[in-house]
Image 1: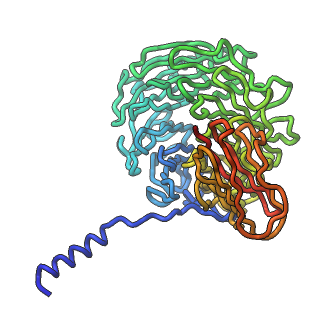
Image 2: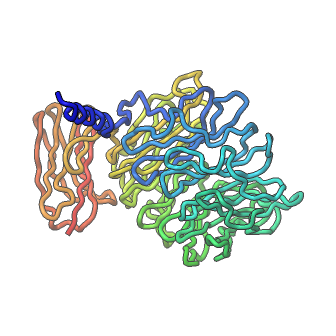
Length: 552
């Protein structure tokens, strides 16, 4: 073998080693196991989770793995279920001191920006911020950056992305006893302060006790606030700190203790909501200065509501809510979708989801899907359950929902969950809880497909269960005919139906006894209005679904 040939072979071997290999999905598909985001020593809790924009997620949590510390850690997963960063997460901040509050938002490139303050340590009662890039690297120094340099007590940090890779942080600036104004600061992607070094006063009215902030479409932030014995109000500023609008959120009964404030961006505006006194009041504000004439009470009836969750809807700009409700015995879960004009979509007083819930009231969460509907997830002792709601309020899944995890302790001491949309109508749930009795809290994750299954197969938009019961639809999108293929593991009765997004039955394609094996039904869709439909196969072995999209 001559020298040139040996060199070419060596180069080929090197290139082979350097060539990327195809990634295989790492999402856990068994009910009795989860993807472990972090199971480091001691407790991990309070995960805040965001979509990475590519079917994966970034999550930030409070971490007690180091004795005497309350640290902040983060992790990123891609759409295939691979952790991008160091196992068990990377450090956001590990400064010694008691962590009092933290908030986070995504940047525009797969990273995250986090703000926090501590009540003791080297810099007590001072608000800091840190950005992790898409590689999990801290970009604003090991200790983060001070958001405002004035040497006064700073509390209640909240954060909103600015639309340019940075963020706007707001907080309570305690200038004197009983005088805490709303201050703000804009930080660019490099951590530079773009407003006054001390931060700028956004509202000066007294003693602010509750704060929330969310992104303003076009740049800036909507900020909701409550002062002691004062109004529940809001202010909107742009990225140059120009005040664009201010108004009340609600004129509901005055509060004597801090109410919970929530905010979510949707479409060309945002929703700001107050929860207190067993009711929820919400108002929409547009980026163009428009607003609802008054707040909307989510539940008009004399029912108690608790533990509300608010999320921005899909492309239709709606608001999505989930809460625990006294109508459902032990406090089951209800949900509501509000249109941009304030009208409810899921019944006058909400849509009943489930009363098979954990008695402590924690663990439920809601997020938009890509069909203007919603995913809702909650806990029921050892089980984690989900429901996929259509835009019009029908269910994609069986009425009881589907269990996607039972790998949790029935003696859990903490249960917090967040949910983000994945690819092709899927969802990713991230939560913190104990996995077995007597152990510490860990952070877990699980992916569900649009039909609630943990694994999918078939053609087009078809789905399959682990047991082998299968349904597939193709072509989808369809202009004329669509063929539905379903497979039975054993002989028995089967019903194949087509539903619209409001849950109305459009057609019954099969209803009778079938032999084990694969069967086909073809339907002419030319008479159907363009849109999304659900084909559902019901048998004694279970229920599976497939999405059918009709186009002109």
